[in-house]
Amino acid sequence: MTEPGDGDAPAELQLTSAEWSMWQAFRNGSTCDLHIGDPARDDPHGQHLWGPERRVRARVVALLLLDGPPAQPGRVSALKITGAYITDTLDVAGGTIKPFVELRDCRFEAEVVLPESRFTTLRLVNCAIPRVEAARLHTEGDLHLPRCVVNSGIRLTDAHIGTDLMLNQTVVHKDRQGRSIMADGMTVTQDLQAEMLESYGELSLRGATIGVSLSLRGSRLSNPFGRRALNAPQLTVERTLYLTAAGLPNSPFSSGATPPYGTAYTPSRGTRVQRFECEGGMRLDDGRFGDAVDFEHARFIMESDQELSLRRIQTPELRFLGERPQRGRVILSGARVVNLVDKSASWPGLGGLWMAGFAYETLIPRGHFPLSLRLQWVAAATPEYAPEPYEMLAASLRTTGEDADAREVLLAKQRRRRETLPLAAKTWGFLQDWTVAYGYRPGRAAVWMAILWAIGTIYFSMSPPPPLKTGEAPPWNPYLYSLDLLLPVIDLNQSAAWKPGGGAQWAAAILILAGWILATTVAAGASRLLRRQ
Image (cartoon, rainbow, N blue to C red; front, side):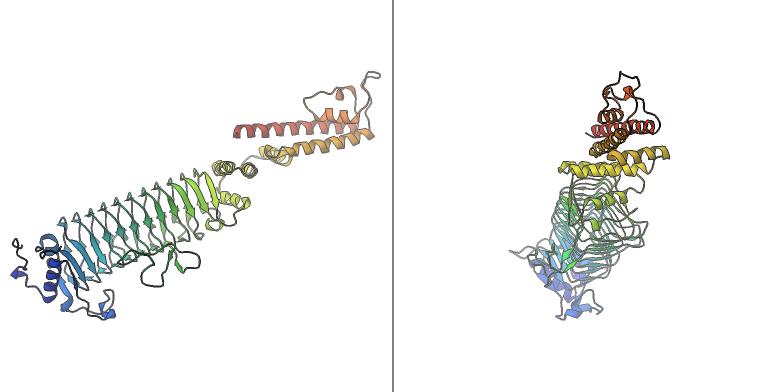
């Protein structure tokens, strides 16, 4: 296209004044600024029409990117355009683009087509774009799309981003398939920052890999009529997934943010915030997160058939600290976490939480979360009785030295199990609960034994039975006689020497029966405790 050493554009291109300015700026690495100085008219997302003085043809831009003129002596060529209206389709599919590329405040007439192309760094900042088609895109450095408005979706399937992918404050509308961003299989070597993103459609990150952190602070994902607003099974994030609130700065740029366009930040107390909000379902099944998954201040707006699905995720810390979902379900089945940081007000009620097979080691509650509410949390997750959530909670409490609370949890498990038993077993269960609390309160047996012994002693002191054989009975002792009746195994040589009749016979039978019941329930409770140990 251009002769070696020739920096002039081919005559057949017939460059306009705007294109000629862009051509010269490319050669010396400077910015071609086509702004007119009126903020309202320079807004690429506004309603004002842009005249021919700002228009550059996509074929000229592609020529500069793929086979541009040599740089001026002592300069590095780069395509830096501000305030341009790029007509036709910018198509560099499969090309290798070596110059640095940054387009700011630009309008695109048609989609940007980048499949299988290779860039060093590509920045499209605050641009209005119909669609970005960039499957299998490869960048050595950053891909930045902050504050852009994309009307028909972004496709980054199997793309490889050499450093950071930035989508801060970007607005993306859905394509014909209902997807706003399709990035299945994408790899980002460092951070994916999508803070205060607005996504209208399904954001798909199936099988994506993020080398450091994925931040969706303050973002709003909306797909109320689809199944999911975020679909990211098998997502791998080496550090933390942030689905949290973003602090809103007082100036256009956050304090301490990285130029040229800044980021949101985690808010401190008293800071005005924008919550992370998800309208529609979310799927993070089988995800791996190296540090944490953080839901602090998150809000989920779901229909009854939609889910926040965290099936089989693995992470050292899950921070479930958002608003309680009013509808839909939260599913933690098979998830594995070390620390569960949560609030009682964050979990859904009965039928809205499933956590069969959910494993955690340490509970770190925020705010008021007593054992009674924790038991309600387990009950809400088990509309039908299941022992695993109770046993997991008890194990966690024992790990932190709260043995008494762990016994209360296991007692609650037995009481819940009793509701599923037939009448005879349920009656026996009530008897075990009433006497020794299924063995978790063995002191009750001693109390009942003392009460029955005292009653028996008083009764037989007033109504002593006659001896079975005159002259052979030991001296009468109502204390020992009552105790011998109550103890089912130990023989004190008292009960066999006397022959009660009438009411005394009934009293002796009641004491014998009560003794056997107490002994049986204590043995059952002891065996249960030994099995648990």
